[in-house]
Length: 181
Image (cartoon, rainbow, N blue to C red):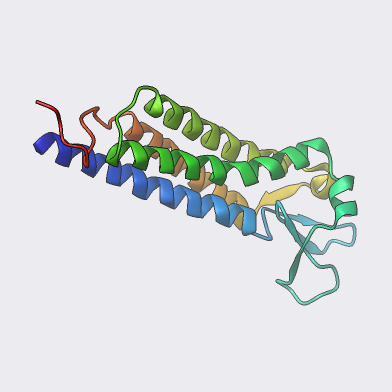
């Protein structure tokens, strides 16, 4: 019973960290200010992975990129956008598989799939930093990190800690399936 309790507590810590990482990853995607920059007139502007500040509008009003604006972005920026979307998706699937393994089955390779998906989530979240090299927004005066980039740093850090926790989950029998003796 002590083994099951220890496994449950470590899995609970992994789950809490993963949920926090997913939240920060989603905040990264939702932020309007992944980068801040100065435009040609010296005005401070903001651009996020999927949103940007509307020129000439009230500060803080953001809209999503139109199809033509997305088409004008470089491949580096588009890759950052795709990775920003994929990171929480990979983490959600990894969390679902880890929960499934914890409660229902202790089958071969589920832990491997969880580790691979979680690694993909961490790598994808890290690749959002390519947006800091944006030629569309940072070419004139350079860029500064905005809130979105800070959320991404937190998400990657929490994913790293959760990944270390994932390696500490002991293998034992599932919590809901009794052992055969």
